[in-house]
Image (cartoon, rainbow, N blue to C red):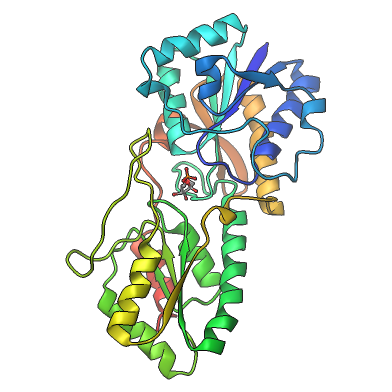
Amino acid sequence: MRIGVLTGGGDCPGLNAVIRAVVRKGVPRYKYEFVGFRDGWRGPLEGVTMTLDIPAVRGILPRGGTILGSSRTNPFKVDGGVQKIQSTLMNLGVDALIAIGGEDTLGVASKLHEEGVHVIGVPKTIDNDLSGTDYTFGFDTAVGIATEAIDRLHTTAESHHRALIVEVMGRHAGWIALHSGMASGANVILIPEIPFDIEKVCEWVESRFRTQYAPIVVVAEGATPKDGTMMFAEGQKDSFGHVRLGGIGELIAQEIEKRTGKEARTTVLGHVQRGGTPSSRDRWLATRFGLHAIDAVHDGAWGSMVALHGTDIVRVPLSEATQTLKTVNAELYAEAEVFFG
Ligand code: F6P
């Protein structure tokens, strides 16, 4: 049997660990052959491949990024995209696909499954916003990087009596902001799920200054102000219709300066959160996902996604996992509010 493997969407630490585990189990245990598809769905769409055998996966466990490359190509936005993928798979003698990705990549996988393609999904994203799994790999690394950065910003903020605003990724979910903000003792955490009141943010900033400490505001890139409280504009869209986020941190800094008279500066962590070596937890989770994904192929569990439930790896339908985003609920956010101001 020949299995195609692809990684789609934003890259994230741990992708190579999945690829390695799939190949390292699939070749000796099930006698499978593998085809690496380049750059997400562009690979099967255009027939762009690379060799994927045991020598190809040597030494990749601790490496960030993906040896297969990635892209945000959406085959459903290409004329005859599904047919092109089906004919690539037939021409190359590929019987099944393992798609490693987030909401968009797995959304495509789910629709292809409905079209009769044999596909298994593996959840990845630093945003941790996929339903059906307790955690995605990449998230732990991103939170660790953001936490370390915020720890460092505390000391410089205090030396200069400045408010420092830290903008983190996460798209429309506040998981990275909430976890890194709580872990690093941020004074304000702003998440997309709960529109913020800039007046309240300024009150927290001022109360922090009164205690002789300098405030750190952690803001998720997708956070938005309550209607009418602050100027705010949306950016460009990608091929899945997602707005390119970023810039809210700078807007908040400007408002804080204007409203409190205190100096406020912004640090945008950006792609640093996604790059480089995965944490040991992410390597562990990604490796287990890979081992279970190849078992799912062996069992012919098409249309399913491997997922973490507690400490168990289980299978859930791709359709369920990609239906709704997993976001931060109000109760969880209220826990962090104890430390605001
Ligand atoms: O989904 C992962 C992610 O890093 C988001 O947190 C962020 O909004 C987006 O990807 C950025 O994507 P790109 O690198 O394509 O701009």
